[in-house]
Image (cartoon, helix red, strand yellow):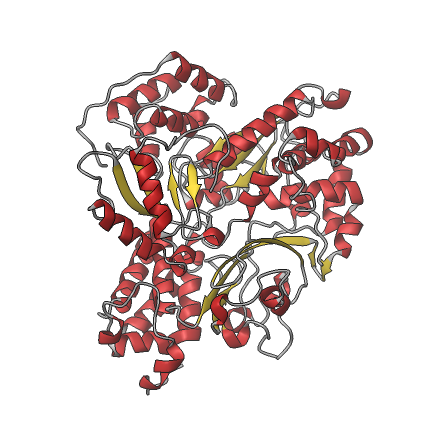
Length: 455
Length: 181
């Protein structure tokens, strides 16, 4: 049984309320931080913990905090990125919906460390009921004296508000989120300057994911060293994984980093194996933007070593044989899943969500969607597969923000690992026209039709 | 930019004004524009879930910004509706994880049952069905959003029940207590 530090009390009845949360030891980290620690000591503790940003990039949180420009004389801000929108990822919602006070406690402790006096939780507009839960929890925290003026008689003031977006995936990118919080379109900014120097209203700002902030109370209560003992290598602590697709037990799980993919996939404590016991065909381990892995690379890496749930192990071998832990959006596909249709679906998502600021992304995502749709519906041409490869390679690395990469990687990985399936679509269009939506004949059965192997 | 010529009665009543003022208090006095997105949500909810140009102009006036600053936000974010829609908007998530669990079939079923195509509204103005991109409920697929709430682990039977509940006026789109199925 893996250790739980975020969801430890998730099943306690009434944990959503301040009263129960406090009874379970809630807000102890705020007390400890404000009464016994300096802001710099808190930053050091988070650095020691090795906590890495849980939104997907995995950048060390303590290091990010230390970049904050405290000497500018301008007020600084902490903004929590709760704009969870990556297909496959629904972990932050779980945390906010069931233990809202954990996030608020983390926001107060972290804001104190950063010297922020006005902080925000930016939540996606679709999560309106969660927005209300957070609003209520913040009211309770104000009433109990954890927010507002002169917290715990320390002279430290903090105002915290929840702010809702309105349906734009791009606002999960930190500078787009800041633009949106300023009441504008969510167009990412060119960096530098980084938000730590010029962020919200051109003032120093740190943007952290919900899960990262929610880990701070435990780190402060137990010490960074204790946190660093959990996990494996540079992947310290626990991680929320949101699992979906063709598995027996979809949902949100807290795992200790370093758990084997095999155990996570097949043990009853976690996913319980494949839905209807059909064979496993592919896996996206970290949300839609990360490369898809074919069955033979899911449990073992290219060298035959066990694949672990960690930043390093999942990316072993680069994009040729690896993927990424990303945001922990774990999407499982059985043998009837059509990889071409899935790739087209992801491309439609990125085309729809591109802010349109950079030409390679604005135009390229549309081209990817169009060509993939053509192939999927049985109108593809042999040269379309190389055309797709060419288009994605011209998007990657050529945009202001990582949305371009996120749109390109799934296409590249699908062609890299499942090129024969694309060829099948092109060469046997009558077999893919007018099929039921997502369900395809298991490719293993029709593979022999593709005689010309070009992989 | 899509412009609807439908008329909309603008009613910024006392309750709405109070809520707008509360939202404005969340930002520094000289940063009123920051409240634009939340204010638009509130105003839209209070006006049959869509925002006419006149209503957008009114929001600009309240926040003391230029009308174009409101237009450019309304046209960028998908949750603001620029034309009248059905009283009950069924927003089906159509992104991969939901599709793996049958979202496309379910959306087709719903459209057939209501006699409309995706993106259309029933002639009586009661129902609109749209496919939307990831709603972040991948583990509870297939699902849809209606008003402020999600309906998850959907089946054809659950969709039938939901339609009946809507027809009977039993679905509160913006109720304040927490509810998910």
